[in-house]
Image (cartoon, rainbow, N blue to C red; front, side, top):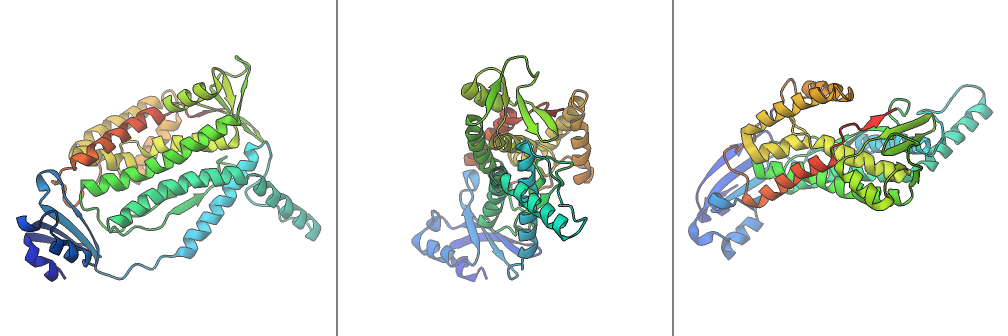
Length: 372
């Protein structure tokens, strides 16, 4: 399949994965840039390609699928999305001060069941703005990953959304994720795919936080010993600050405790999720980014960060649970799996994105997210 490109290449190496052909080729000096002829040949390549940079600027990376596109179970993705949207709607109704349940009551006769169902549907409809906001943040985050992976020819699944019973999780969701089903070639791919989700999701979350704070209000100083209050139908939660939320809240509302509008709650949750995803551990987005920046040295930072979570658990016990969960999901490993071309350095053009992502983690991390 490489035959039409061979006249323009000095030499090349081909790696065959389960469903991808990955070619790293050194281009002849006369055709770097590329030349018009080589450019036409690249356009005819039945896959994706990109040029390396820095010391490897004479190299082109080509990726193509070896099998037909995998048939996606779109029915499952749509069902999970709709189910999650519904539970998040109900969470939005709770944030408006209502009380409801994940499922309607089906006991009694037809009049009782129909009345219960109609009431449940009205509850969900009232929470629509919150659901659109929070699901928009999650969808933006996952589509950032998905579309960037597709741009590099990586076999990626559509997003899986995870609904949650509002009796145990007031926002109605455990989040969302995508699966990468073919290998990541190099640290450039890893950086771009790993950073795209947090940055796109953060942009949407910040916008919603600003809009939501415009509809929030302050209570007299001293009434609550917390920077922000989330009103629930069953009581209230006290939300902590990151450096970012503190700055935005002070700029927009001034000093005092803010009672958050549901849109502000969605923005606050989105910023919290951004920070959690940017923890430099395992296969979290932060692990992808730090491995792209540091290579195998990421493991040392991951160990320090994990021990830091354990230490913070002395103040906020939720961090202990997260530290254990990350260890279980990573199969006992905190280090990031190696990419195929682990010796190819990260292009200089991607280094600022990596360190900006580290800074984003620093300003969005909330040491004590919620108290009761």
